[in-house]
Amino acid sequence: MKTTLLTLVLIGLSLGLYAQSGKNYLQLSAQAARPTSALLEVTNFGYGGALKWMHGFGEKKQQATLEAGYNRFPVKNLSSGVSANYSAIPIYLGYRILANKISLEAQAGTSINRIVGRNSNFSVSETKLNLGLALGIGYVFKNFEIAARYQVTDPRGTEDDPTFLAARLAYNFSL
Image (cartoon, rainbow, N blue to C red; front, side, top):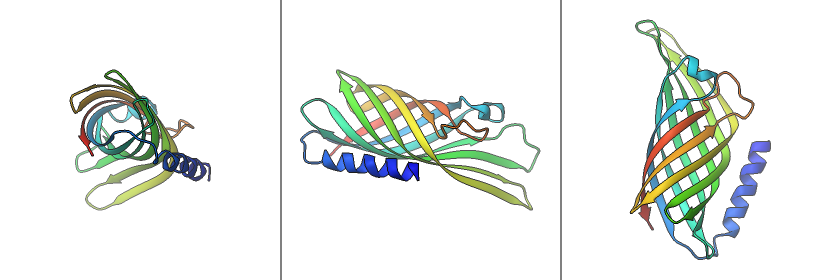
């Protein structure tokens, strides 16, 4: 309920900003991620991608953002024929500001966290919907952006929480 309320408030605020002027972009990104939670004990690195809409507003270089992504963390040291992975699917609204070529962004929304395990005869999965938060800093050059991002996909810090630090490479398409 709290996640839904927060998401609705952020959507309402971003729609109110729609009438302001600014540059709009669509960003496509790829990232490599390292878990920072208890998940680090069972996975090494993960990878993912995202699509982000950035709507410029006001006189300053600032943007309201809407991002959807996918992050996957394969489980290590499994027996032959067994596979498992954790995944986080964030759907976040955010605020981004540009200072010269540096971008700073804060985001919040919903994270769909999932674990899947299977072998040749059996498959099991569990899905949870959690509040998610992310902070990022980047460097923009031409239409490219190199960034670091810290993402918390469950603020309660549970064992199956794919919280991570990521290095991101993105391309911004001007709209």
